Amino acid sequence: MTTHVCTDHYADPMDPLLLVLIVAGVAAAFCWITSLVTNETSWIDRLWSIVPVIYVWIFAAAALIAGVDATRLVVMALLVTAWGARLTFNFARKGGYTGMEDYRWAILRGRMTRWQFQLFNIFFIVLFQSALLVLISLPAYIAWQHPAPFTGWDAAFAVLFAAFLVGETVADQQQWAFHKAKKAAGGTLEPGFVTTGLFSYSRHPNFFFEQAQWWAFYALGAVALVADGGSWLNWTIAGAALLTVLFIGSTVFTESISTSKYPAYREYQRTTSMLVPLPRRRGRAPETA
Image (cartoon, rainbow, N blue to C red; front, top):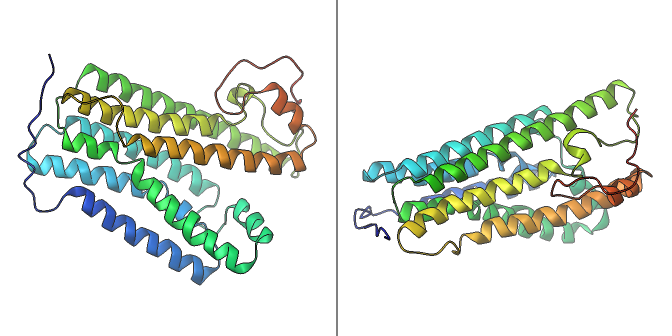
């Protein structure tokens, strides 16, 4: 039997989505202005792990204030907070908050004229990525619109999200340990990139787990809609889908750089899945010293 949930109690004059869009607009303006002032474009990277946490908590707070069952939204907010804390820590220990710019932006800047890069900066780096950070958060908006009771499906997808979070944490730690060892060895450690642990099953396991978390997050919003007589498929899937497209494009670009730097990388590509962790294909993986 389908449970239909009344949302008449949302008579608040401010839709939480409006507040999310205001915060997103301010964040985007900040990133663009600071990129012009400092002449470096990693400001959106510094907010990447922060603003989705704010957005989801806005929806959770709206439900709590309305006095409806906010269990699902609070769980969603706690999961995204854990995601943001992990990503912020990993970004900080790499020096991301000390003025370090993503090396890929520098490469693209060198391939474009100044005006071309500024257009790329405002439309892709700032506006597209700012919009994407809103979109991946919007399953929480669906959950706010349809405040159905927390179910076993919610628990299952929450556990799945947490499992993907653990996977990404392990992958990032393995990568961090390799680069520390590489630095200790004077900057050279064969084959030049990590191929052990989770990286023996996927060339980018951290990328895979990052995307997978947001698909699980989408599913949590879909559960609320299904409980209200809707479909598992809804418009907020655009966030997870666009994030996947972005990661695939970014991965292809990153690997074009890796193949030019490391002779052994092409063999690694041949034997190891790009994203989804799979058993290694026949062939000898690059040896790690």
